[in-house]
Image (cartoon, rainbow, N blue to C red; front, side, top):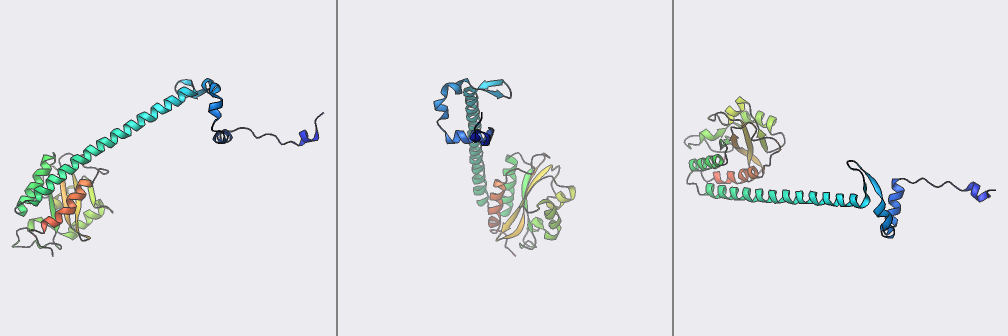
Length: 236
């Protein structure tokens, strides 16, 4: 005969993942006290069918080590790439700073880009930001801001760079003398918060420049170039 207490006892709650996990958190020494049972545990494996818990733990640890090694390798590669990038930038900056005139600066920038396997590099300056009219001899660098605005709105959006392909009229506006240009990297030249021109790197490869590429080098060159130009061209 069952007692009244037994009749009114609540049924025990079924075990689920959360209750098991909670128990293990509350009893961290469970695996120490039950080492033999742990060694005999067999758990499902998506590839091998089933493995022991110990083997499963070792496999996870091995994978974590592999992931860590891959991350370290990637960090080392990035460090080496950044060191190489810094060396290139330092060479270019000192090379441009010692140019005797603007034509030599343009030439050095262009051939530095050619040394990287590119078609070339140049820059255009907004007419309303620089004194480019005759007899300065720099009128060929001038770029009408109103003519550039549609390209800027379409290509740059909210960024100061554009990397990718341009249509024929856009190329004609920026680098009319260039031929067989596949892709470009454009960076706005900014001085005291105002856009004063455009830095242009070009490649004959249509896929060389593309969205998502790093722009650290472009940022640096576009940052110091306007100051160098004031050695030969006055600001409006």
